[in-house]
Amino acid sequence: MSAPTHTPPHPASRGGVDIRLPWWALALPTLAFVVLLALILNPADAHAASGDPAVTQFLERVQQLTAR
Image (cartoon, rainbow, N blue to C red; front, side, top):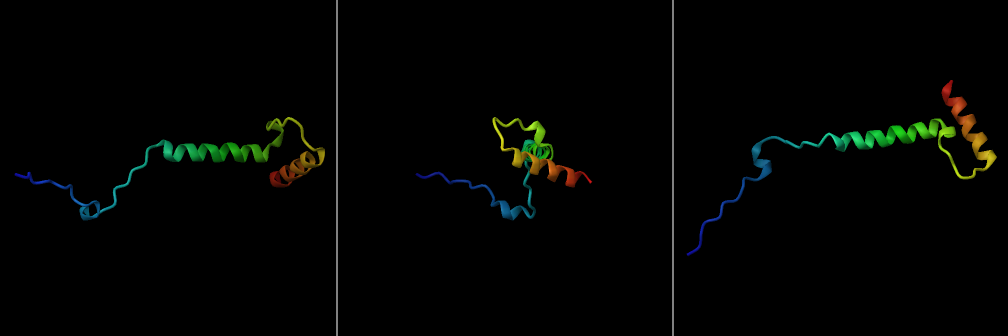
């Protein structure tokens, strides 16, 4: 004898969208974006092993232009 199976209602039948993200799903990408943006705007804090002086001067010039 087989037992009847109970299937949960389809999510679309509830009438509304109820999607909840955990707090870190938005906080971590935001934090990564802010850190990378800070490194771009202040290349002196990004300690490279060895860098070409022309690239460093170019990045400093870009920083000066964006600071205006």
